[in-house]
Image (cartoon, rainbow, N blue to C red; front, side):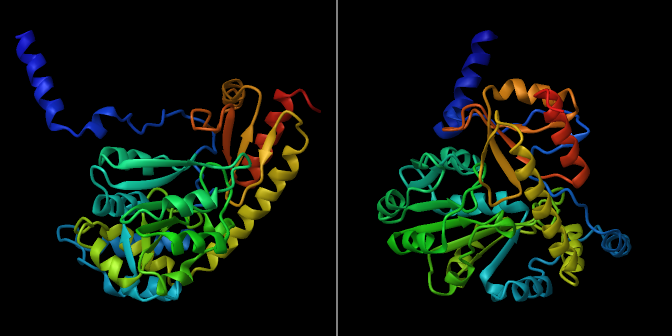
Length: 363
């Protein structure tokens, strides 16, 4: 019986891709804390008025039938707000699904993908699962992009180049001109992930009309505060979007998400208000962190800070004692003893600073 079990495992492993077998699972240990500032979420929920409208509509909606295959009116409304055509966008179940769609359409064994390091780990995870040939380009010591290296690597025909700007988890961004240089040099596809563009950096959305090979990613999880709904989208030339729509899963946006987006894009005033509040709180934290000479704070263009300390695990656990959860990113390349701290609400940020004062014995 034991021999049969071993043979079954061997058969299963033989059926799986080597990239999957060699990969580690993307996991996050659940820790219950009063203040959760570890995942770059917005500290603001949707306005109650929008929630009421959504709930009224969803209860009168038939749940036993599929949503529209492509919700045309919603696509048109969102496209208009971004000053593009509806044929330029593809909406999905979080930007993670959009990443998976692009990489599934482009990568296979031997295909080259150029990924900055450190950056959002999902790119490398999916690329590995697809047995792609991953070329990692390490950031400069100050966490800026090595533009010349990216341009050189992107010259490979059929390659896929990943640019996260502003970058997670470093908070740094690539200038408009430098991104354009990389797109110009590329003989493949360039993905520009603008998940944090509402908080800083320079968008290149206007370049999609001139470049067939450029794809932008946007998320509704950060500035919009919809992390729990998992909504994201890609923006690109209609030719590349048309090809990628063949790979997108059918009916990938549920009726609840569609209704929420419809309500949000009727009135986006809350969005600008929330962004201003987050940027104000970011400034507060930036100034407050200067009190602590044991914190090395990396300049950020996002809604989070990358902080280097003497012992990240020690500070992580000390903050837990105050029921404050941050993200230990010390396992990333270049980020030894680094923590990532999201900008929370005014109250959360004040409690964080007070806790740091107690930890470091400051009055």
